[in-house]
Amino acid sequence: MATLGTFWILLLATVSPVTNGQSVQMDPVKSGFVGSQVELRCQFLNSKPPVKISQVTWQKFVNGTKQNVAIANPSLGVSVLPPFKDRVSFKHPAVRQRTTPSLEDTTIVFNNLRLSDEAAYICEYTTFPAGNRENMVNLTVFARPVTRMTLTSPTIVARIPRRKMTVATCVSANGKPPSVIKWEPQLKGGEATFQETRNPNGTVTVRSNYVVTPSRETHRQKLTCIVTYRNEKITDHVVLNVQYEPEVKIEGFDGNWYLNRQEVQLTCNADANPPVTIYQWKLLNGSLPNSVEIKNNTLFFKGPVTYDLAGTYVCDATNSIGTRSGLVEVNVTDFPINSDNRLMPPEHLHNSGAAIGGAVGGVVLLGAFGTLLFVFLRRRQRTFKGDYSTKKHAYGNGYSKAGGVPEHPPLAKALPYPDDLDDEKKPAQIGGFEEGDRDYDADAEDMKRPYFTVDEGESRKYDERTLTFQYDPEAEITDDMVSQTDGSVISKKEWYV
Image (cartoon, rainbow, N blue to C red; front, side, top):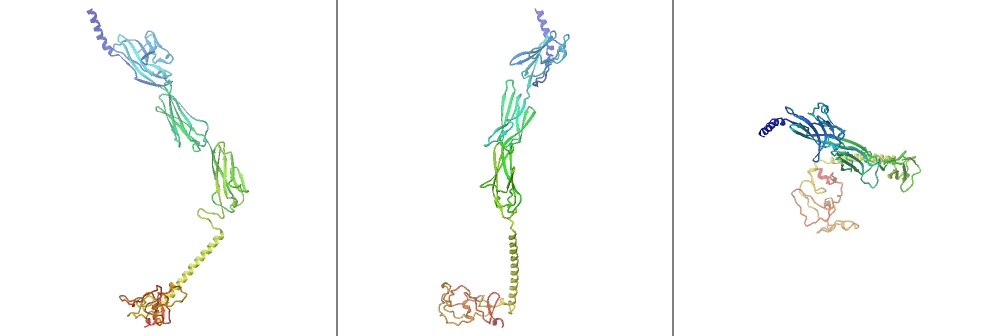
């Protein structure tokens, strides 16, 4: 017994280093698309001296259970089990040799990969006397989605009242992993909705609807659906076909229809899908003028423009969707107008010329009169000698010859006024004097002045006399007095000394 026990200890000591030199090499992960081909590598690194390989087994590990896929045995040959029989094979022909097979490389090939093939796969080597050696690879199967983009219907009708509706749909079906959908461009008022559906085979279907309010502006808009699947972009597009009622505009009236103008017309332009089939013209609060000729969507006015053409013209345009109207207010003027002001008729132009000529003539006459007046005043100023500005007098402007102030003559009690003058124009009596107490002479003309002037620094007392009028009556000019340029009068003897 001791001899036998010692033998097994020596045997294990001999095999142990060899056992540590054996290994199974595989890729940790592999992936492929549905329908494609993928290789699962499995290589055995033998020891020196090499151990004997008794069998190689490929197994599918799902939910904690193992399922045989393929077996290679040096004596029995190669066997592939259902459901992999028609799709799995050993890559190297040496494995399939009957006489001297080589099992160091037992890589298998999957053809027509299926979603159900996704799992962990074990490659197990059975050796003698080392026992079993194995390793594992995780296989991921991707499913490329099927992308399609469609219009909700071939034609989209924009009805009133306006409401939002789905105009296009983009679908990325049966993808694994799921796709991401985006729309371009983003139409005004448009929005996208998204929905994901997980299928029993592990794929995902993504659906997106584009919602917008159909209108004239959305007609012929190009919508592009961009599907991003992993690092790949898939695009598809549609062009919206929106049907809408006519948009009507009347052209031809330029705001300058005047009497006797020739060849005027109005045209009813309508933007519609489908096109307008019927145009109808009418005049509000009346009937169309007799001079009108209707051709398709245009009103032709024969002959010259008259006041009968004025009014509000309405055009009704109809297509299969509905009827819309447009209108224009036409007014007729007597004469043509420009962009700024109304142009005057010929007779008005003539009158304007006469007025301008009269104004020019008046300016010339006014200039001549001013020249004559200037000459006349200059000649009068040269009649006297001396410097007028050096003399003073107590009459008119308050200047007199140098010297003392003459004693003022007695004032009358009241100045005479005609009886028919208003009472408010008659001055009050000046106290201390009776009417007729003084002679009426030139020196007494100072009595008519409402104020008196004196030399600088002098003062004058008037014994309680009070001035009761505030106006300056004109002085009576006698033969021995001369008017001055400032309106005053001076005695000739004061100047001709």
